[in-house]
Structures are given as structure tokens and as C-alpha cells.
Image 1 (cartoon, rainbow, N blue to C red):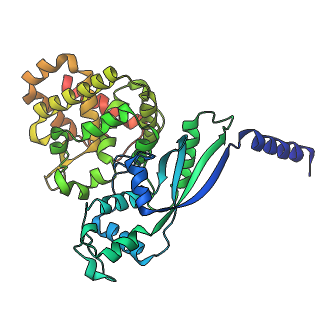
Image 2 (cartoon, helix red, strand yellow; image 1 turned 90 degrees about the vertical axis):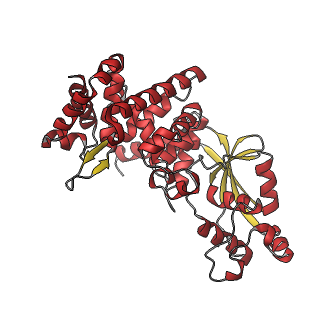
Image 3 (cartoon, rainbow, N blue to C red; image 1 turned 120 degrees about the vertical axis):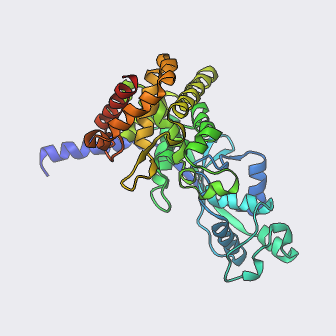
Amino acid sequence: MTTASKANKKAIEKKFGETAFRLSQERSDFLLPQILDFVRNKKWINLRPEYQRRLVWDDRKRSLFIESLLFNVPIPPVFLYEWDLSRYEVMDGQQRLNSIVDFYKNGFALKGLEKWNELNGLRYRDLPETLQRGLDRRRLSATVLLVEGTDKALPQQGDIRKLVFERLNTGGQQLNPQELRNCLYAGGFNDLLIALSRAPLFREIWEIPSGAAVRQNRLYRRMQDCEIVLRFFAFRKRANIKGSVRSMLDRCMEEHLSATRTQISDLGEDFKTRLSLARDLFGDHVFRYKDEEDKFQLSQPLYDGVMVALDRLWPKRDRLLSAKTRVLDRVNKLLSRPRAYEVIVGRPNTARAVLKRMELLAKAIEG
């Protein structure tokens, strides 16, 4: 081994000693009624659908999981993170735990079962007492992660939590970027994104239904509706438009982690007023373009450009509304140009394309 190789090996060993943080693991088995108590007493937190991701499992998948418990089939462990003394955050296993809690609360009836089809249509309260007692005796394993020492390169507990969470979610149904942000940047700003995505006007424009049907909606199921809202806040600040779009969105979440209630309220008002202005200007065809078959299609890039352009032109909103026929005409003419169409509605999703898209639309609308 050369002297350079020895030096490199020592540097690697030194970094291992300095940067490897200490995580201890404890493995415990819990009866299902115990899990209900932990959730009820808020010892296990972040079981709400907005955490990690919205409930991806439908009732059939939840029913199969309950059937597996009744069959006493081995279930993978859930992962908990001890963020405070005897207080745990669920890092992996939210779908399983929510299914258990909801079934015990009679929140859904079993469906789609083939092995034990006699159970279809039954809720927990409808099960024979023998099956209820059997379910009460089933156990779920939990691996508890405890931080014993912090990494010098990652001194913040939140950074350790982020790294562990990302590594846990490299398999299975992997979280998409917005689902990760929803977990890693929990707080007032993240709550605002969720609230704005539920606003009636936003749902109407993006064709997101209300009630039970929302679970089947593509945008809602994987939190893409929240990412659409986030894009407005990330792109309205010109200095933030650099690097990849994912990094822009991550930076925006991080920058707003410590936002005050007043700031959160102001941001919410900004979004709602700009969205209303867009609807007033473009009507039912807001954020839509005509495809090759002359049918109107929703476009996220077009939404980005229009929302930020209107944000920049906000002081001129009254003039824009008084001349909305001309505004519509100019935007339609812009979209009829192949190169402009490609930038505004097409696939490019780079920082350069984002900037160009907004400049073209702002110029067309203002003119």
C-alpha cells in the first residue's frame, strides 16, 4: 500500500470516528390494544394522514392486512423515533398503524377478502367475540431508534431524523419528494400548504373531488396538490430559481420552517388572492391550454407561469381585469407560437425554463 493510500485510509477511519452518530435500537412487541392506548395518549404521534403521505392503502388493502393479523401471519416491524423521553414519532409503518386504529374504531368494513370471505362486510364490532379476543392478542413489533450522540457533520437532531427517515424509505412504496417534505419540514408552513390545497376554488380548478372520492384522486393521493401550492411560493422569489426544481422546493420549505403565524397568514392571503385573480381573468379555462384535438387540458407549468406573473403584476390587477379580453388574446397568441408553447406548456423543468416561462407570460399579460 502506498503512502498516499495509507493516508487516505487513515482519513476515512478518522471521518468514521468523527461523523458516525450513535443510534441504538430497541425491539419490542406490543399487543394491538396497547397500540390503541399509545395513540390515544399521544405517546405515538404523527399518525394523521397528512404525515409522511396521505393514506395510500385503500379499504381492500387494509382489509387484507387485518386478515393477516387474524391469520397470525408475521408482520414487518414498524419504526419509531424517540424524539423526547417516552415520546415516539412513527417513521415507518403509518399505513399499518392507521389500519389497526381505524378498524378498532369501526372506521371501515372488511372487503375484497378471498381466503376468509365470510368476513367481508364486517367491522370490528361485528366480529364474533372469539375473533375480537384473538385480534386483541395479536402483537406488532416495533424497532425504536434512540439517538445517543450527534454526528459532528450533522449536529442537528432534525438532520439525523431526516437521514434515517430517507434511508428507511428506500424500499417498498417509496415516498415521493412532496411526501418526504411533508414529514421532514412539518410545521406551520407545511400546514398552510395542506389547508390551501383543500380550498374550494383550488379543488374546483384542479378537479379534485370532495368526500370519499378524493382518495382515488391522483393529485390528492400522493400530495401532488400540496406540491402545486408550494411551487407558487418557491418560484415567486426570483433568487430561489436556481439548481433543480426539487432543490428549489426543498429550499422553500426550509426557509419557511420558522415562519410566524402572521407570516403564514400573509402567505396564505397572497396565494388565495392571486388564485382568485387568475380565475377572474381566465375563467373556466384557467391554467388550461388546447391540445392537438382542440380540447382544454390542465397544465402545471402554465399554472406556475401565470401565478408568478400575476404576483409580479399584482399592483396592476385592476387594469388587468378591465382589459381581460386583451389579456386572454395575448396569452392565446403566445401559446400559438411553437417555441413559446414548448417552454410554457412543454416538458422543460429546469431553472432556465422556469424563468423563461414566467418572463414570457408576464410580458404578454402586462402588454
